[in-house]
Length: 315
Image 1 (cartoon, rainbow, N blue to C red):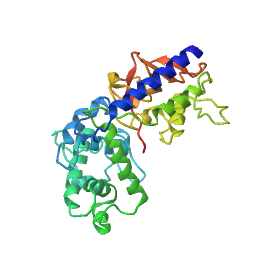
Image 2 (image 1 turned 45 degrees about the vertical axis):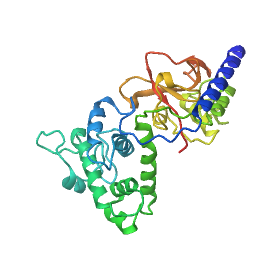
Image 3 (image 1 turned 180 degrees about the vertical axis):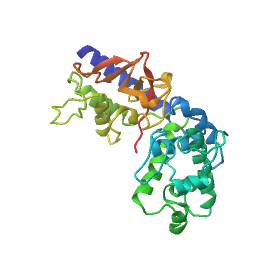
Image 4 (image 1 turned 45 degrees about the horizontal axis):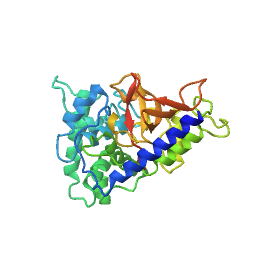
């Protein structure tokens, strides 16, 4: 293990240094309208792509982020406030703004073929309602979806409601995870430190649900390790693997850099089926906590259930 660890450490540092050198003074990437591969469950991908082009105020990536935040892609979701379906319409709003997206003669809030086009159409209508409000038009539109256009107009921007402010903040950040990036993805400046944290845990026994706390005797499961590694450098990740998928843009297999999170899924068309995550270190290897009875170790990433990767970003 000692020799392999040393080789991996040199590989990580060399690859990361080269990536940072290549980065140079690259300009910020423009907002894109495509969807990142694997970011949306296959059964909804074309619906989101088409509906996300309903008007200039939205994009497929923004709509995907909104639906993910609303329901986690669950068409049967229902909130205590009676918000229903994949787009979480309350009955009164659905009665006014629901559309027959699939042209079958009815408007069904529980049917994504109706609800997803309805969410897009409603976003577009809200954008018109609040177009004269100062501030960021996208944030005002999202705030109107959550709190109502009247409140956005009343407060001349995003209302001072914690729920609404969080809603807007999360979706605008999530949009980057769902967007298809045309250019090179910048490496995280903190990736090497996150890897160093994980390397220090090599040989630690696996514990399902383990977060590395004293109560867990310093043990981790897969997502506990990735979360702790990035928490150590100030980038907060969700606790479970399939939620960590949407914490940054998604590099392709041949674009991987050390520090990227690599994911494995039961269904390669559905990000909700992700069951494992590791931290890429270069050379086709990751550091991961594999399963009960194993220890944190280096493993190859190329396997039939490889789903994709995420480059974690702050926020």
